[in-house]
Structure formats: structure tokens, C-alpha cells
Length: 365
Image: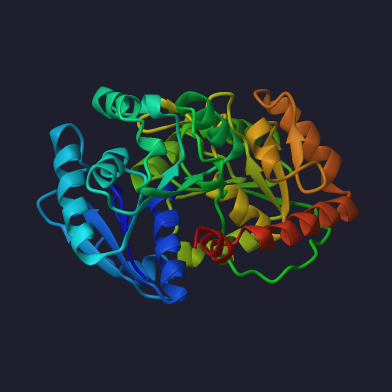
């Protein structure tokens, strides 16, 4: 099948959304489809995406060179229209997170699949009007509605009175890391790591406070831009705190394997898109699946949406997660309990095999 994936995001970039889209295209290609990824020309990295994302199964990249900035305002609609026309000409199926592209598919009777990750209230008034007025999500053109979590599915079924629940599928994120499981060893100093966005809602401040409080362990933060890391280094000069800007996906595997405990200290409001969109009830973070694939102990904020994937047998949840002392207590309890660390880490590793990008795409198809 000829499939076009239309994305508004830069590529390559350090955005989790770009990583997931690229891995979806890669595995669609793996199973014999001719795949086109249609994008704006907004990447700031002068590097091949095959190297940046460690791609093994190739697909064709199509950049719309007119769009040199992330398409917002009028450019959003122009990009959506031009990318749709291009995709319609070369493919049998369009996949996208772009709501206006889905509207165009319904108008022109083009087979499509939409991925839903957030509440539609984060979209423009025009998009919200079109989806409500024309009942777009019940269009026959939409062959599948892919929801990132049960929270997203319930939200859209309720808000749009979706009639054909059979075409709605929940497909959480996944991982492409290929790490061989190894038992953790007892150590005097543990390496505690965080990989991801440098955003207050992702709990960076909790980790910085932990590093200051806990001199007996080492804390690593991998993420953010070089400027962000430079600023953090100026403010937080600690011998047990190691800060490094974003890693290419190709190098994440080695670094994540060197950690003993992996941290997910989300706040009670998890934001994206310029700290505007709250995804706390809907998210399915790629970070979680990469952590699981590493087979290390995960300590996480106690958020309901994460428990769609892992339970107390695969992760330690911190109930009072806004308080750094609560994290400190959990770390101290588990530090020397090597048996429990390995049991939970191995449980997590085993469950990660259900959530590979390969399995995700097979369900897609």
C-alpha cells in the first residue's frame, strides 16, 4: 500500500512526536508499504534522519520548501492543503495528527487515519467548528481513529458521540530500543537518570532538588538544548549532578543502560505546546516505554494515565510526588534492596515487549 504520513513537526528534531512519527513510518515501510513522510522544511539539524533516528527500513521524505517555520495561523491551513494535495496524488491512505487534513480527507473522500493525542480544545476555533458542524470523526473516509490512551478515547467518544467504536483503537506509544536485560548490581552510589524535555511540568526541579539533598548518589539529566543545559550548569554547580543536552536516539541506548534508576517526576499538570496544552489525563510518554525497555527500576509520579501501562509490580509510584522528600524516601528504601530493584526492573522489561513500535504498527495495519 502507498501511505503518506503528514506531519507539522520538524524532522529531525528532539520532539518526542517527531520520533514517534518517524518510527511509525519506518515500521510501516518494514511491512512492505511504500511510505512518504510529508513535512514542512523546518529542521535545524543538518543530518540525515536515518542516522539521527537509527532508521533501518527506509521511507521517502518530502519537504514542502515554502514552509521554513512551524506552520501556524494561515500557514497551518496552507501547509495542510498543499500536503493533502500532494498525498492524495501519490498515496492510497493518509495518516496524520493534523485535524484540518482530516477535514479535507472527509470532503474529498480520501481514505485516512487520524492519531489523537490531545483534547481538540487545543486546536483553532475554525478546526473545532468544522469538526463539530460536519461531524468529521464519524466520516466514512476515516478508516481508523488511533487514540494514544484510554483517556483520549473516552474523551472523544463522549464529546463527538462516535458511532462506530470498532474503528477506534487505543495504541499507546512504544520503544525501538533493543537492550539485553541485565540484573542491577549492588553499588554504593547509584546513577539516577532522566531523559527528555527540560520543562518544569516534567519535574526537572524535583531532580535538581534531589541532587542537592542526596549527596550519596549521582543524578543525570539528558535533554533540552545546549543553551538550557548551560544555564542549568551555571545555577546548579553540584559534584553529583551531570547535565547534557539532547541525545540522538542512536546514542540513548548506551546512556540509559548505564543508569540504575530512571525517574519520571511529572507535576500535576503536564504541558506541551508552549506550556499551554495540559496532557496529564491523556499522555502516553515515549520516555516510559524506553525506560521499560532498559529493564531498570522506574520511579514515577503517581498519575492515573500511566497506570494504563504499568502497575506497582513494574514501577514505584510516588504518591506525594510534588514533594522532593517523598522521592528521597522512596530512593532510600529501594537503594539497598537489590532483589526488589531487579524484580521490578525485570517485570518492566518483560512488559515492554508488548509496546514496541513494531507491534504498534502491526495493530495499525
